[in-house]
Length: 114
Image (cartoon, rainbow, N blue to C red):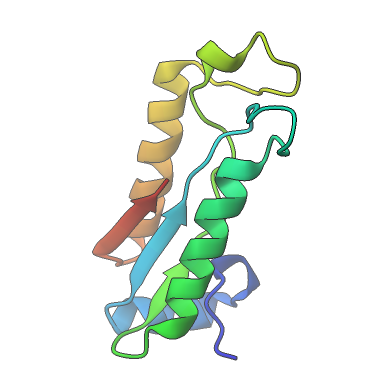
């Protein structure tokens, strides 16, 4: 199986991927309630699983999956135990900083997958 997970790659492998014009998928999700029948990590589990599956199946160009961003903006779920929410400006700053970091390494195709 090909290597697609950013966090499992060495810096030299990431550098090669950037030079090959790889796309980077950033899975985004929240830790929040989804009723009594689902775990609080449902959002991030879905986006991470989809990103990984897509990256492994695409052979036309390299695709990497960045470490997931677990934290979201979920004040409307805070009345439910288990929810972890960032302030809106903090959430926007986290997304912006992660994308800027990836772009700084030469990646031009960056997708936020929620």
